[in-house]
Image (cartoon, rainbow, N blue to C red; front, side, top):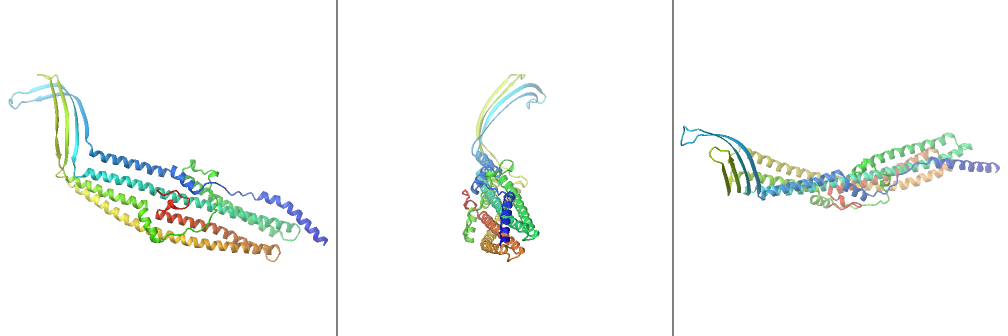
Amino acid sequence: MKKQTIFGLCLVLVVCMALPGLAAESSLVVPQGELTLEKAFTTALEKNPGILQAQERIEAARAVLKQARSAYLPTVAAQGGVKAMDVTGQPDWNPYLRVDDSYNEAGVGIRLTWLLFDGFSREANALAATHGVELRKQALANTRRLLLKAVSTAYYQAQLAVEGMVVAKQNQEFNQILEADARIKWQVGAAPEAEMLNFSVKALQAESDFSAAERDFKIVCAALAQLMALPEAYLPGELYPVRITKKGDFPLESFESDYRFAMANRPDLKALDAGVLAQEQRLRAQKGNYSPDIALVSGADYLFQDDITVKDQEEHATYVGVVASWDLYTGGRRRGKIQELNAGVRALSQQRNQLVLAIASGIRQSRDRAETAFQTYERQKRTLALTQRIRDHVETAYRAGALPLTRLNQAQTDLVRASGAVALTWVQYRIALVNLSAETGRIGLLPGCPPNS
């Protein structure tokens, strides 16, 4: 009885000595931030250079439209000049007379030209420019779609890295507790030193796992900061993503519903449709070159000649009329241009067919990945619950001396893997949903996303 009392006092003393060391060793810090997915989206959409570039391209397309519409308005041009003339002339009525003269000539004029008809080319060019504006708008929407997809993926990967750090820290703390317990037993001669060192090694391995997850977190944060266009691609601590707090199921639409939505809303498909319409209008404009150009012209000219041998001359002239020009032969230039544009229309049509097939395939693949990822996540949750119970039972049996150290190591390793697998499969499920929503064009309708307008 006295020996048991002495052993208990020694045990309490060693525990008191070991606990401060344990607190000092458990110094791994899991990053905590306040960045929500919606805030990441808002920042990226406001500052990302790709979005700003797409917006400027819309302005450029509007300027092209303004140029095309200017063909409906008259053109007013002014001209003027001063010349020093040296003239030699021979009148028809006297072939033996030759007149040489030097004089100065100054003239100014103004001319108005108003195109009345050009085979409807200007109308077609204006419509082509209008479709060009729509194309750029849809290109902006598509840039936005791809940006939201990239931000979502980076955000969830950052959350996954944080979960990896959490699991590694919990594993380290568990092994440190067992290390302290084994140290006590070793110091009182109740366990070999190798058992204590085993937990020390496991704790160090957990720290290495933590460092690897921390490295992945920093890399993903740099990518996320780049997408959000933060200065120097640096994500400050307060903008670290929030921890995963809510899990559940996000019901999927049917394939037919997803496909119909994509056909009606995918911005890259809309942009391609606008491109086809613009190309068809350019073809129509080119065909207009087979017609004559008819224009109203009007103007006024003034001419003054001085230092002429006979007498200074001053002329005034005003005019108004209709002029027409018609290219009867261009060496095949018009036909070649029409053939080029026709081939371009056919190529765009085939490109659209290819995109439609890619959309259908992408939706099917994303749906399969999302369904499989969710099923895997559900199984991993059940596996984690069972593994946690097994580890607890094994730990109790080990402390009672009923099971060996190797069995506890195996149970703890299984628990760490199961915890990581739950976080991994959940993030894979969310990323699969992001990919599916990007394929259908619903990316802005996911929870936490701004409207996809």
